[in-house]
Length: 212
Image (cartoon, rainbow, N blue to C red):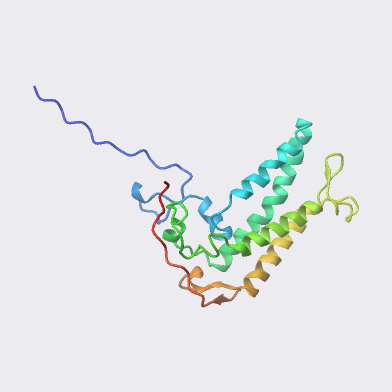
């Protein structure tokens, strides 16, 4: 009596949150490796753990009153993340919507170098603009009885923190892109839009590192 051959093992389907790299045709499972987080890394770089730490501290700071804590946390998280979204949109605009899918995988594959490595894995232009905009916006928050920033009373009691954060992020990020141009290779075949670029070469992608 012969035993029927076992069915070949199949890999589990990739998570639905992964980013597609092709058009309307089906993408092989082996190539489904990109994630939405990769677009964040284009603007800010690969070392983004501190963002989680900073934003995650807000609920702890305001945990004395649950209702007040939720309201305050929601306001502060929006105040901090709105400039981040503006910077990502500007990055998409100046790059004409072009990204190198393979270079985006450097961080996932634990490699180093590539178009989006910038300075030791950090895009200090995007990170710097976000930090300045977020901190300045927090100083303009005006939530009576919950949290009022040092400059929260300058607008006659009106909370203008969101407007301050959005405007600061847009202006400061664009200014940094003009004063300190990114490498030409970052922008793809059509080149940058609205901002200059530099001839500085990008580092080549190094082999993946292994944990010991």
